[in-house]
Image 1 (cartoon, rainbow, N blue to C red):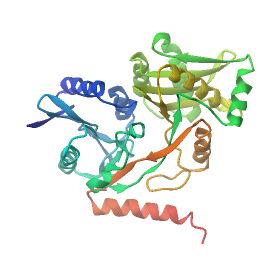
Image 2: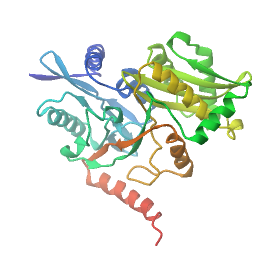
Image 3: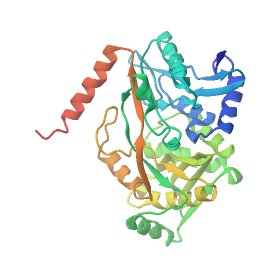
Image 4: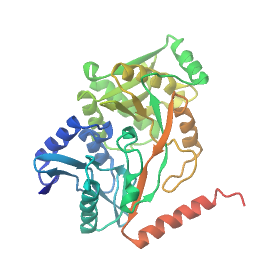
Length: 345
């Protein structure tokens, strides 16, 4: 008899079951509990976390991250008002439908108007197509880019940018991992993040969760120092054979220098030694306007930078399911107005 264990009802048993599933089956860092806790702490409109694991007998067959947020009085299954990692489940007959039935029931019980899921780009072999379309979701996919960590390479202009920094002895690189952690330097990263944004954009708890990822051996913080001063940082999270370019911050005074080329190059060398195959560079990556995705010129330039490292384009499979006609019309009307601006005549 199938049974669900909800995090809000039994967090200890839920965590044990979730961890057991990750240890026994392919998964990426997007599904580490500390990463999911980071997403929850980052959310400004979180109402309740309805995440659960599904068991058949004593076997965990599915893990479902199910945050419910509210924005302008409208509830959604989403994270940061965007796409939440989609359910993980074993490849068994009718299991996907069973999971989605539970998800939709919980959505209706909690007044949810739309469900937004993103399929893990680091699990292309396990989920080679957008299975969400088989459950009445609308396709909202984008492009993603996976950097090859086993054979890292880069464009010539990226190589020149790396050499420019490496040839100057006033620049040094720090790689902080579990064996070389330093909370005071981590606090410098947090302060630089606030300085780069010009304000505090997220709570301190999110930075502490990043430090926990590092302590758990699933993250590195790569910093670039000019003389005695850190001027740029990037966080990378990894698990099994996949990694994520997770978070970055730089000193606005040095924005005329190619800061992130050398940071990424150093990270790729580290991840290669760890046996990581691919790193998801994340969005912004798609350069054209799409449903739920409206890049500006700065984001388009960031996308161009990311593809300068050797890798491949893949589909960033996403889907949205509406449980409200009004919610559907609001989103489509907004997309229509934004897309219309891109039409020449």
